[in-house]
Length: 206
Image 1 (cartoon, rainbow, N blue to C red):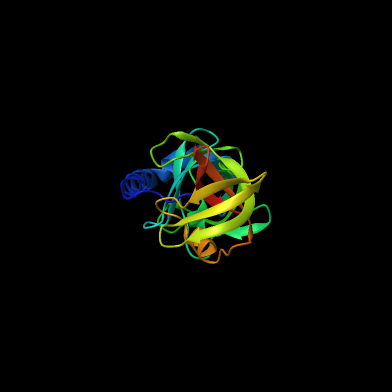
Image 2 (cartoon, rainbow, N blue to C red; image 1 turned 90 degrees about the vertical axis):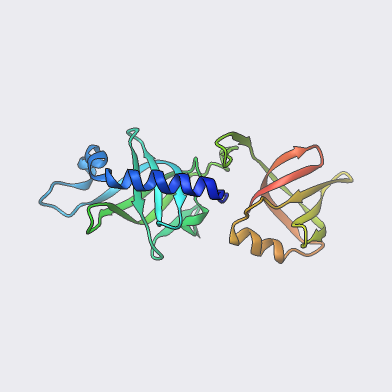
């Protein structure tokens, strides 16, 4: 689940702010799951992640009915995928999610639980920061060398073949920590995008 560039962050912040200001109207179509005005405004919404604005703590979501909405989150919000917990910042554009939501005091909507139904990377495609679709591969091998200064490691994938794997420009904190612990001889599994026949750019460890 890749980080956004500074330009993308500003763009998502603008979109999220604009979306949040009209969230009540846009979520009118979700009334059937949120209950009536005389009942607690809780329920769930499913859709595709368009981006995460960590500064404003909002998830920009295109709901299944086609409407774009902004969901507030905080440190208590849980993200689960395949029985594992992740940070909200690990969500990526293209992830398909179901979020448990409730109406916040300012009239917007807050989520305390996000279930990832299908990962953008797990589906074999992921959106890069410029909006293009990348072909993500599931890879594994034995670590041979680690160049921490340049953010690169080499793995043996069998049959005397090796791959050079580079970290993305802005790796997640989780991936950065995993990279720092790599040692020669470790078995490693990850998602990556081929840059050429012998070089791969990391998308996420798993």
